[in-house]
Structures are given as structure tokens and as C-alpha cells.
Image (cartoon, rainbow, N blue to C red):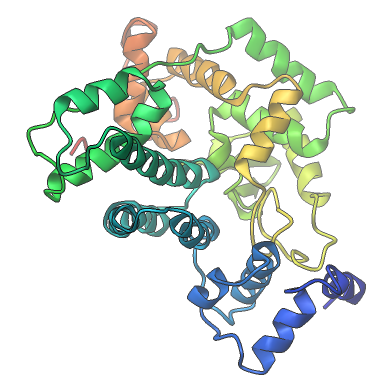
Length: 380
């Protein structure tokens, strides 16, 4: 360990309290705790157990598992233990086992789970639990639930609650735990307004010139405002995604890698040389562009997004402005491939902005300005 003092400080934390780091390591050494993820999910205090679990994954002692999948699996037993009705426990456990967890695992295998995905999974469980309790208060059950019950619950809850309950009702009908003839009301879709182009350029200029703003926020904000990247993708970027070719700097977001303007390149390279959280015992050799405090983990996207909002860069609105500006200047397929979007997304945004890119410039719109022929994503 390059900084043994940091490691010793971590071992000393929570000394005298049950489940401190030293005690967990001692119990592991004595064989009292099986070296499995399931065993760690049952340990308390959960924060110390989670931190040690991530360290063991980073060292290769435990197989790597998505941290937010672990977090959900650690949370679920406690939630089930607080449900009073045994039948409700059985139903919620089945819902979690056959619907929620498989989708989380599939997401983890395909890419990664974000904090918002983890929160939504827990919200689905909570709203399903509350719905069963609500039915009981009406002297009803899931099996006897009728359309009048669905409509009554729907009218008395928020759009977020309805969205969270939708998966449970769908699963219950498919698994014949309630009537298959029930109708789930259609979901309302609302979109946030994007920044204006003047607001986007003002924010970009401030990030490039204001040295009072922390460097990592300047870099993350510029990537949102220039390249229309969601914060959940920005935190997954590594230093190897920043490519130096002679005097040029490229950022790998899709294919081909995107050129980085000189002022932004200087900022980006300075950030790489002075990244946060590199002087702690858990992350001394991190390859993340935005290292987090946990072993082997990048920064949390929800935390980074909140910090960006504090410096005047609302991530969703800034990203919306950036992608629309890109689509005014380049054909949709080029933008989709270079920035990692799906063709369907850019096509929808083109329609929302008032037309196809071909209206703005003559020529062959299937090619990029450099002559590169983009790969079109499948619509299947």
C-alpha cells in the first residue's frame, strides 16, 4: 500500500462499535463470515460491510458484482422483514425475485446500474407493498382486486407512484396473481425544457474561464454542454477514453472519437493530471476520469449532477440543448454514432426541433464532414 496511514485510519474508524472494519476482517480470518456476496449482504453495519466488500472485489478476492445490484440485494431483506402480513411478504419476494432482480442483473451485464435505476427498483418494491396494504384496508386482496380498485388507487396517487406500481401490476397479471382482464391506465410522458442556445453558450464560457469552479465540475459540465452526454455516462469514462494524437486530443464517446477543441483539451488534460480522490488508500491507481471514494468505483452520478446544478449547469436541460444544437449542424446518424446515441433518439429529436437535417445544408447527409460513413443502429 502506497499510503499505509490511510489504510490504518480506515481500520481505526468505528473502533469500539459492533461491526467495525477490524472486527469484520478478524471474523473473515477466523472463518466466521463466509467469503460470499450473500454473507456480506446480511452484515451490519451495512456501510462498513459494503466498503469492505468493494475492497475485496477490487483486490480480486470476491468476484466483481455491480455495486448498486449489491446495494439493492442488501436492502431487500430488511424491507421484507418490516412487512407484517406473511402473504404480502411472499408476494413481494416473488415479485422481486422474478421481475425486479432479473432486470437489474440484465442491466448490470449489459452496461451498469446507475443510482437512479437502483432507487427506482426499490420504489417499485415499496409501492407494491403499499398497494397490497391499501387493498387490505379495503377488505380486498390482490386476487380479488377489481378495476374499481385500480382506478381508485390511480386517482389518489402521483404520476411517480403510478409509474412505480405499473411493473408490479403487469407482473401480477402475467403470473395470474390477479385478474388478467384488468386495465392499467396509459402512462403520461413529460419532457423537460432544454436550455436556450444563449444559456448553453453562457454556461460553457463560464466553465472555460472561471477558475473558482472546481476543475472536475468544469470538465464534467463542458462534456454535457458540448457533447450532450448524460452524467451517468460521464462518470463511466476512463482516462483511456481521452486520446492524444500529436497535438490533437480526442474523446471516445462513440465511433469515431470526437475532436476536443484546444481550450477544452487543455482543461481536460489538466484535470487528468490532478484528479480528485487519488490520494486515498482505496483508489491510488484509478483509471476513472472521475474517481470516487469507494474502491474501484467512479463518482456517483447523482452527486455529480447535484454539484453541476449548484454551479448553474442543470444536466438534463444542458444535455437537451447540446444534442439539439448538434442535430442542427450534423446529420442524425453521424451524431448518433459519434455521441453514443441510438438512431431512434436522434430521429425523434430532429422531429421535435422541426425537421430533418437535410433542410439545413446541401449534399450527402449520410456521411460525416470527413467522409466517414456512419454505422446505422438497428431499429429492431
